[in-house]
Each structure stands twice: as structure tokens, then as C-alpha cells.
Image (tube, rainbow, N blue to C red; front, side):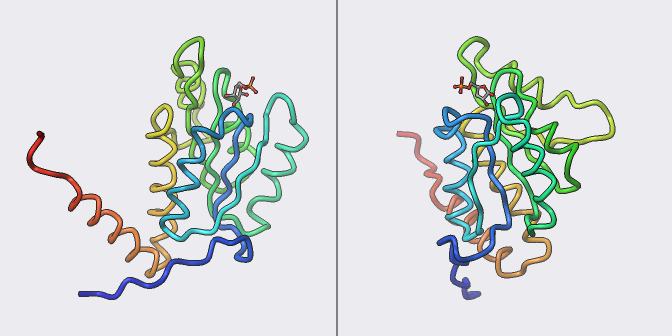
Length: 172
Ligand code: RP5
């Protein structure tokens, strides 16, 4: 059996490879699941509140600096009129993964459609509404990074094997 390498430290000393951003602190209850999955996989990352509406200058600066700082992907979560992922994607060449946060008024359908329906030319990889989308954004970012990181590829495969083994055949 192949040895699984130890995870990369995610103690803040390692430069982040993935940036998790969200439009509001109220999004953290959803977006923390992306952070937890990246931590599980040993991927150094950072988490910031960056609002397209309320802090447009912060958003611009974050997006413009993301690639030069060494980030390899951005996970952006937002709810309602969720412009953040698309605006950030317009400002960086990095892959941007959008997580529609569930809104009170429309249960996240507004978030989903405003993130997914990007006009041709600037893509946002849109995930599912809510926790599932946050978890899968982290797994998708991991899969992208794993194409050039053999140790991460092993950790990702191990994670998937463990998930498979945890599914009981008996429903009761
Ligand atoms: C969006 O507005 C945020 O992404 C959040 O999902 C939503 C509501 O924000 P708060 O009013 O809770 O700060 O920009």
C-alpha cells in the first residue's frame, strides 16, 4: 500500500494556495465548510470577507493581487445578487469557483443564477447552493492543484477512498 504523505501545515506559516472569500461574515457558516475541507486535505489557504458591494476597493485589490501573491485558485461565496465571484473572475486570470450562499428571500436561487449565468468570456465554476457547494469547491480546487502536486493527489485519493469505505450498504 502506498504511504500517504503528511499534510502540508496550514498554520499560517505556509503561503496560501487558495483564497476563500465571501461577501459577508454571515456567509461564514457556509464557507467554513470549504475551509475545513482544505484543512483536511492539507492545503494552505486564507479566508477573508471581501464584498463586491460594500467593499469594492478591497475586492479590486484582492483580485488584482491574488495571482502575484501566489494563489492558485479563488473560492468565492456570496448570496442574493451575488456579484462577487464574477467580478473577481473579471479581475484575475486564476480559476474562480463560485459558491451560491442560501439567501433568506429566495433560498439561494438568486445566488445560484447570478453566479452561474456569466456571459461568455469570463468563466466562474459554479457549485451547488450552500454547504455542498462549499465542500465541493474545496474538493474541486484540490483536484486542480493535484494535477501538479503528486503528494496532494495521493491525499485526495485517500480522502475519496475513506469516503467510499464509510458508506454502509445497510440503510437501517
Ligand atoms: C451578500 O449579501 C453576502 O454575500 C451575503 O450572502 C448577503 C447578505 O449579507 P449580510 O446582509 O448578511 O451582511 O453580499
